[in-house]
Image (cartoon, rainbow, N blue to C red):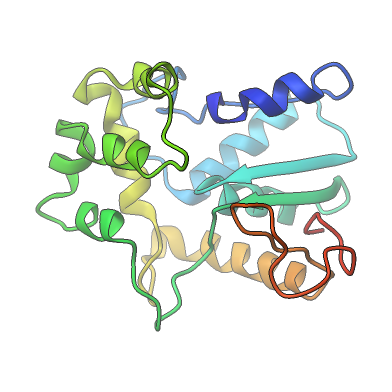
Amino acid sequence: SYTFRSLVAGLGDRWRVLAPDHLGMGFSERTGRMHRLADRIDELDALTATLEVEGPVLLVAHDWGGPIALGWSQRHPDLVSGVVLLNTAVSQPDATRVPPLIATARSGRLLRTVTQRTRAFLDGTLRLAHPTLPKEVAAAYRAPYRSASRRQAIADFVADIPLETAVTADVGEAAVGVRARAAAAAAREVLVMDADERPIGGNPFDGIALVV
């Protein structure tokens, strides 16, 4: 949720903003078990049901939150007014190269060492930020993950990324559903922008900024 602190501050006086930390992440409870993509969608669904969330809902999702948000939107299309996706994907095209940090972390022998036993993956991810994160911001991102036991979900998230063409059965059904939702969204008008907020592939006013 810390990632969305500016968004929450900017919208909180006009919108009901929900920015949860996923189980095992941030300062949420450590459950001691692995949460797969389907679990994450179920957990978000349970949270919104408990909070009696009603539409219209604008989903804003970053990184692995993208597939989770799309999975939730697939269950509640009547509630969703729009989806904003940042730096996310729902599959790895065969012709593209996996980012080196993720490829290294996904190595079976290195996974737990890089992502959980040490802060290598966490620190490497923070160093990728552009511009460079101020020290106090980087420290805030590290704060929930001071021990290996608190970093288990980082390892589990990395292990759960469906990079392979044939994803495992645990991830497969959820990933297929998310990809179907993404394909349906791609058939609508979409505005794609780069990190400098420059439109990619057309006039910025030709489409809708929210993937709906």
